[in-house]
Length: 138
Ligand SMILES: [Zn+2]
Image (cartoon, rainbow, N blue to C red; front, side, top):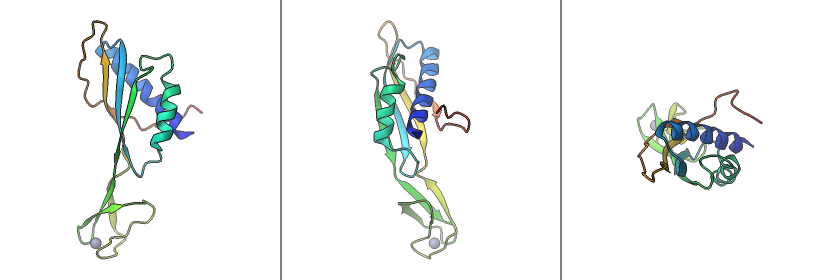
């Protein structure tokens, strides 16, 4: 299951960030997932529960923001919504010369947590969590 390796990668990064920020507990993790990514949000949420067991992020809420896909036509310059990435044709001029602008995101946006004394530092954006080839632990 692809989502499990992604969930484990998210937890890895979250634990690193939490250690740097001195968080005793992570309460919420926000990720942004493009509609064309191979990640199914429901499956990721499910795997996240397993991946966070016995970590600082146990019990944390996974907040998933889905990003609609959009492409631009390189012939006429028009941008248009995309529902599948395999065959992109411009709806205006039918050119196949198009560039996907967004929809394949897999980003860790923010981490919310508590320090041992109960403060809540703002961690902000922490980077891309797309697993690299070889990161797959299955
Ligand atoms: Zn066009």
